[in-house]
Structure formats: structure tokens, C-alpha cells
Image 1 (cartoon, rainbow, N blue to C red):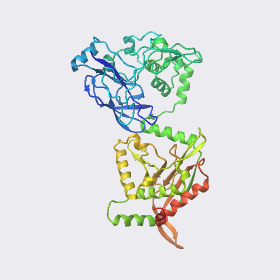
Image 2: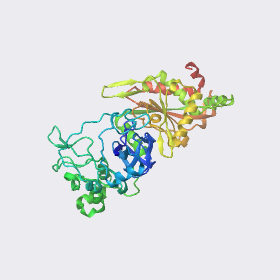
Image 3: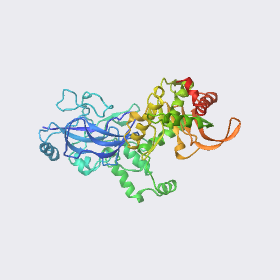
Image 4: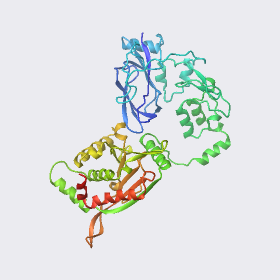
Length: 485
């Protein structure tokens, strides 16, 4: 007899709370092996393939392509232990076999076969022990109600047809005496007063209501105990005449007309991070013009000598790591909870890269230990990976300082926003011929504008100015770097 196990969207690491389904790799009825990728998802950091820790027959998929799911939401159910594909399909679709949905990954002592891994490099790492099932105090949700109004986002009619009944509902009481939903509960809510919590469990239902300015308190939930479901919000959107006139007028006046682009994926992550940077970091910017003629000549001489070509970005990165060795205050982060400045031992250098998916900041690990040739190769690898949309979360996290070459866009200067939780960012404008006083005479030189945006909590203007002046000196006289090589 097959046991039906539910595989949920795993924790993808680095604080990610949701992911968008890009492409399903399996269909209902397919046989999957342990750790076989079943879906490709896009997070705020990268696109990854999610492997399923169970082997068996896929009996249901939850969510269509383009649906955004929170971590912990169901992805698929798998019939484990079926001897034949057809037998497993028949038992699930026909409801003839008893099925169970465990609350945790099966332990090694269970009959269900599982690897315990949910994503290479992330996830559980080992199967979790089965928790003791507590007898519910609230009635279970009939299967008919589940198919009619599930709180799970993106479930289709085809996918729910073969899905097993949900786990029974439990309720608990908070310290303040209010009835609350137990952790992990999917269905069911307790009726609350008008001034109490809204009877909504799914974060996707709240998000849908927020995006369309729907007042959840004005809705009557069709779920068990008045639970507001996605269908209730959608019904309110289809029948705007039921909304009070004052609410409708306020909604119309408060929403600008025009095309609306959802802030999701990389764009949404950028918006959140930059907003947080502006809220939390008291930043300041200083800048200076520098004569880059000698730096360009040094690069040309390196490349003429043979071997792999050295990029300008690699030379600027080498200058940055040398400057951070002299001014470690800028290679740090601020821990406001402990009220401490944490100076970091190594330089993990982020660099801004523009892709079809938006701006991303890959990180070159241990940049302070790399030569210009090694930096060139790593910049090229990460840039190409970014353009393919194949960067992993590890490629995009852990930076301690960012180098932003906005000169590639044909602009001279900028006041960049610090990449939170870092403490500084160096911006580099375009290098263009300009009149310049050189050795007491007016000449045409290759000039670049350098700007440093820094967290004023980690240092004062003297330190920031010293850092920027050292960078400018190295740009104007690359031989200055020989002191630190």
C-alpha cells in the first residue's frame, strides 16, 4: 500500500522567505527518484532547481508556473512504496488506499524512503524525527471543502483531484487569551472580534488583499470558522459594487493610473535592500577626480606582455583591497543590537552587474588574496553566470565591500546606495579625455571621477577621505601599489 508524502518548499537559505515557480520538471503521474529535481524556482537571489527527497509517483502539484509560494507551502505529493506506477495512480486518484501525510520528514525507521535532503547545500541535511501527533480539538475539514477553498495558493483543479486530505486542524490559546492558529496549520481559524486579528492564515491571501487595497475586515470568510480564503478576496475583486462607496472612492483616489509591475524576484529584493539601507545607514559621500592615464598605460603594458588579458575592473579591485588593508574601518559592518562595529578579517568584494533579470551583485570571495589575473578570471566567470541567471545564493551573499563601475553606462558620477549590511561602496565613473594640468602644463589626460559612499557610524570623514585619496593616488601612479604587493 502506497504512502503519500507531502514535499514542501524548503528553506533556500540566507533569509529567503518565498520563491516563484518558473518551470515544473515533472507532471502528475511521473515516477521520480530520490533527490531528483522536480521544479525550478526563482528566489530574490537566484534560480535553483529543487530536488525532492522522496522517491515514488507524483500524485499532485501545487501552484502553476508564475505562482509565488512562501517557504513551507506544499510543492508536490509523492506516493511512496508503490510497486507499480499504475497501481499508485489508481489508489490515489480513486481514493481506494489509505494515505497519510506526516508532519515531518520520515525518520530512518519509517517505511517511506527518503534522503532527508531538500536542496543541495541547504535544507535539513538529515531526516527530522517524526513529531507526536496530537488529537485535534477542532473538527477536520471535509475533502469537499478543501477542493472548494484551500488556503494554499496556486492550487489547480487538476492538482487537487488526487491530493490526500489535509492534516487535521489544531487550535491553541495565546498568552493574552485569544484563540490562535497552531504553527503549520493550513486550514481553520477561530472567530475573532472586529477589533481583534483578521481570520487569515495564508500570507499570500494577505498579500493579494494588500496589492488590491481590499479591507480584509470587511470580508466574510467562507472557510471553516470564518477563515478568509483566497477565493473570498478574488470574489471581492470581481464584485466591486459590494465595497462601501467611501472605501471605493479612497481606493480610486489613492492608486495612480498606468501599468503596474510587481516588485518580485530580483527587483523586489533590490527594492527591499536599498530601502533598508536608506532607513538604517547614515551614509555620506565624498568624491575626487583622478588622472587615470598612467593606469591605462600600465594595463596596456601588462596585456602586451602576453598571457591572459587583465581587465580594468580587476586593477581597480586590486587597488580597493590595498586601500582596505590601510583603512579596515570600511571593511566592516555595524551590529546595533550589540552596539558594536565588527571589522571583518577578509575582503569579499561585491561588484554590480547588470543583467536581463536586473541588477545583481556577485561576490568575489577572498579578493584580498587574489592577483589581478585571478580577479580578472573570477569577474568574467561570475558575470557570465549572472547573465545566464545561474548564480547561486552563495555567489550573491557574504560581501564586505562593493565596487560599482557605473562608467560602463556612460556617466561620470553617482552617489551609490550602500549594499546593506556593508559599510562602504566605491563608485567609478567613465574614463574620458579631459583638459588636465600635468607637470605644470595643460594637457589632455584620461580622467575618471571616483566616489566613496560610507557609513558614518564606522568612521569619520578623515578616514573616508584618506581611503579615497589612496585609491586616487594608485590610479594616478600605479607604482604606489608596489608597496603593498
